Every structure is written in C-alpha cells, then in structure tokens.
Image 1: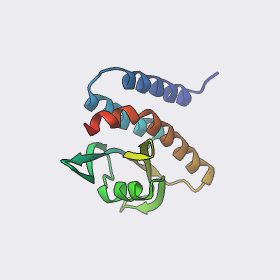
Image 2: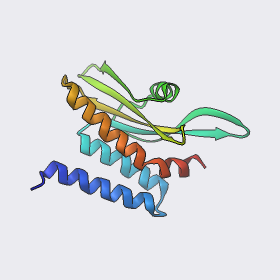
Image 3: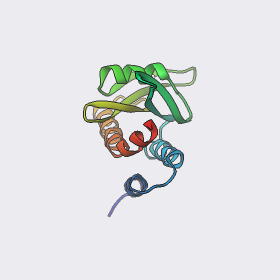
Image 4: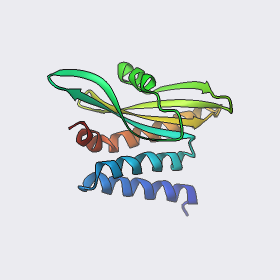
Length: 151
C-alpha cells in the first residue's frame, strides 16, 4: 500500500505531466509546478527561473515566473546556469539554516532555466540526494514549459 506522502507526490507528477501535454496557460502551469514542488518537498520556498533571449543578442538574463516563500535569487540561478549542473548550498536566515538547491532545466545541452528550492536543512547526504533526484525529474518534465516560456 502506498503511503499518503507518496500518493500526493504521484498525483502531483501525473497532473504536472498532463498539464505539460495540454495547451493550458503557461502561468497556471508554472504556478502549479512551483506550488506543487514546495508542497511535495515540504520546502520553505520554490522559484522557477527561465532564461530569455532579447533581440539578436543572446543574453542569459533571467525572468522570475513565480516564487512562493523565499529565497528568489537571480544570482543563485545565474550560478546554476553558469555551472550547468545542480548546486546545493547550506545557507541560513535569521530564523533557521536551509539548503539552497538549484537544478537546471536543460534540453539539447542548452540551459532553459532553473528550479530553485529553499529546503529545510537535513544532515543526511542520502536525503539531500533524494531531493536533487526529485527536483531533477521535475526539471525534465518542465522542459516543454520552459520552451514555451522562452518564446
């Protein structure tokens, strides 16, 4: 029998995949992605950043689609794009320490955007790898959304 937490996560993933395949509003889909990831991970905050082009010059300027909670850091997202790999940093606020996680959304070796998560700090390396694995899977699912949002 599936645990309640796993059932919520599986339901979210199925709904997200259906939204990616539909012609629903990109703003709604982006909000669903961010809100759902925050809920599934019991995270402090989540953001979706999209790389956009301006004119004939290709600029890796970032556009914030939506943020719930904090942080929303264009500098952090830029670091993830520059590295082209996931980044995990231990940071803290006045309230508590947290893991600042950034995972690139990529297609054909091109970075389309970044999923940024502010996750409660856990010491277990295995748990951190699980967070990265889940966020990476969501980044793969989010490729069609990122492509639409770049237009």
